[in-house]
Structures are given as C-alpha cells and as structure tokens.
Length: 313
Image (tube, rainbow, N blue to C red):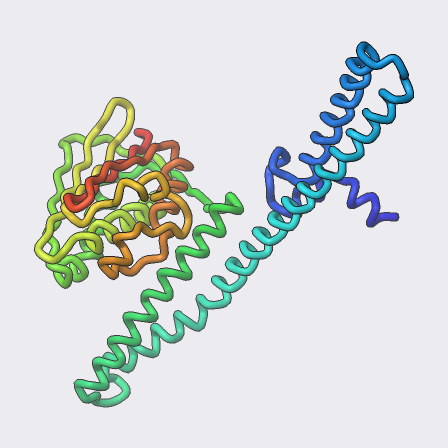
C-alpha cells in the first residue's frame, strides 16, 4: 500500500530525479491528463452540435480520449526513462569523481617524491618518465576537479562564501601560478587595470577558478609566440573582466554551443588542444550565480575575447 502511495506522490517522485516540478515526467503526465479530459469535454460539446446521436458522439470522444491517454503514457514513460538515465549518470560521475580524488592525490605525492630524488638518484630517462607521469596525474586531477564542480553546480551545492575582494589581486595571483605555463607555451601576458577599481562581492575562490579556466583556454588556443591581454575596468555598477587572445578562434557554427557541458569546438581536435569541454560551462554557472554576466566574441583564425562582470561591493 505504501508503495502505491509513493507512486502517487508526485512531489516525492520528482525529488527522486532532482528535477523542477515543471520538468518532472509524473507532473507532466498529470497536466496532460487534465488537458485531455478538458479536450474530451470540449469535443463532446462541439460534437453534439453536429451529430444527432448522443451515443455516437460519446463513443467517438471516448475513443479519442483513450488514444490520447495511451500516446501520453508512452511519451511520459520515455521521458521517465531518460530522466532516470540522467540521474544515474550524474550519480555515477559524482561517486566516481570523489573516489578518484584520494588515489590521484597519493599518486601526485609519490611522483613528486620520486622526481625530487629524495629516494635516490635517477637517470635522465627515468626522470622523463616521472615527469610524464606527473603531468598525466595533474591532468586527471583537473578532470576530476571539474567533474566534482559540475556535480555541485547541478546539486546547487557550490557552497558560495561571498566576501569583498579585489579582482585585480585574484587575477595577479592566477598569473603568478601560470607563470611557468605561459613561459613553456611562449605566450606573452599583458594586464591593464583601471586605477581606483572598487572591490567586488562574491566568493573569491570560485572567481579564481573562472579566471584560471579562461586563462588556461586562452593560452592553450594561442600558438607559441602569441599574446593574451587582460583588462579589468569599472562599467556602471559592475567590474568587468576582459581576456583577449590572438589564437585560433572559435568556428561560427560552434559559437552557440560554447558554454554547454562537454562541448569542444571542431578546431580544438584539429589543433590537438587537450580539454574536457567543462571549463566554460563551469565559468558561466559561477558567474551567473555570482550575479554577473559572461559573454564572448570570436573570429576564426584571429582569436577570441571573453568578458564577465561582477557586482560591486
């Protein structure tokens, strides 16, 4: 009996899929049922105006109602299976990401220990293998971190801790962290900051992640010898961050999908640029939850410019 009651509890069923009410299959079925009944009543009233035999009208309306209910049931069951598949996929990603974090951290620690030669001297070819292992572990850690962030975004559990801070200071910290990467890729970084810039108010750690993602993309999609320019300025009641590169750009056909999860433009594969297709999706979600906006312009072969704004403290 309790199982039947649970089945009839629309709110409980919708909660299982982590979906808003208007996207829930059971709620949609209820709405469609009401619409079908209303359509049947309307059809009966119209039918009686043109068909003299009330029984014929009733049978036609009954047959139409049954057919519509069957079609609705089939469609809703398909939606339910899709919603369940999405729920299971999200759950799998969440569990797997968290389980991978510990072994990856251990691998990172081991490779750093071996690379430091504290366990004994290493030959040059052995050192190369450890550097390669360290690089791949770092890439996997970035992927796991992105997956965990995406999972938290979907669960609305980013755990924002708003505070007033200087966007310039956070940006310069990111640039300092990327100093080795920019040098290795032979990309010149320029930064221009408007004087007397007001502080913004949101979570500085989340914004640091956004800047890291945008800068990482700008460097990776810019050939060696290229340039990345950052400008931070005040625009009305917000602070605006702008990052421009002269890299490969984004094809016009791909631009409308660029903020979607796991999407990577065609030229990313062509130029063998590594990535997960999550960084821009994460950036967009964080900026929007911070009360700002994010947008871009890009010309294939000439580069891209990304902007975001944040509310002033």
